[in-house]
Image: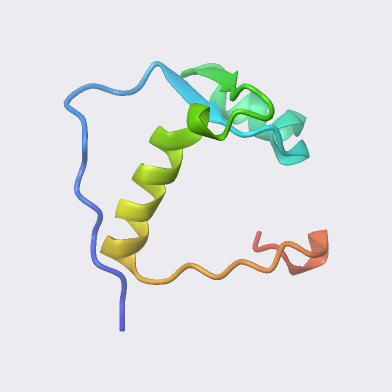
Length: 80
């Protein structure tokens, strides 16, 4: 079953991206692609409530698209 289009949830482009502290967010290629357009902000370590917005929006996205299964056990298994 193809994924449904996720509707835009904002009228203006976001100015920042709140992310968790996983090493992928320090990838220079990722930062080079994102940071000219928006600021990347690390969530406060050991404070899960700081990421409630992320988790809530991810849940909405997953409901609109379907289950998301990503095997990130090795870099070879990641898409792209």
